[in-house]
Image (cartoon, rainbow, N blue to C red; front, top):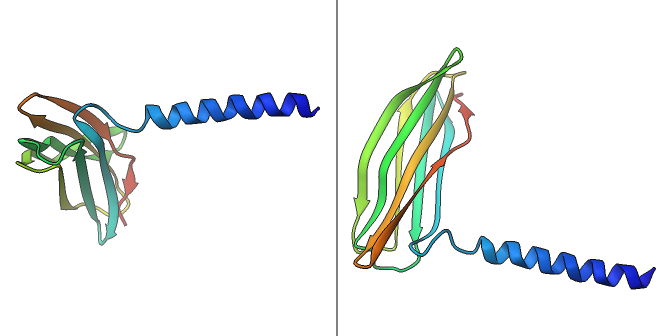
Length: 134
C-alpha cells in the first residue's frame, strides 16, 4: 500500500507545480489584469479595472476599452463606454467609475488591457462576472 501512495504523491506534486509555473505570468508584457463590478447600494455599481506589466517602465499601459452592460429582459445592453484610459512610464494602471443604475438589475463589465514598450506590446481582454445592483 505504501508503495502506491508515494508515486501518486510525487505525480500530484509535479502536476501542481506545473500549473503554478504556467500561471505565473500572463505574457511577456502583462503580469496580471482584472476587471470587477461591485454593487455599492442605491442602484450604483462600481467598475474597477487594473493591469500590471512585467516591467516598471512601459511607454503605454492601460485600457483601450472598458464597457459596462446592463441586462434588460434577456438582452444585455451597453450603458457606459470608456476608451483610451492610459498612463505612461509606469508598470501599472487602474481605472474605476461608478454607474447609477437600477436596484435589482444585473450588470457586467468587459475590459481590454494593453502594455507597450519600445520592444513591442501585448493586449488581452476579460469579462467580469455579473452582479445585481442593490
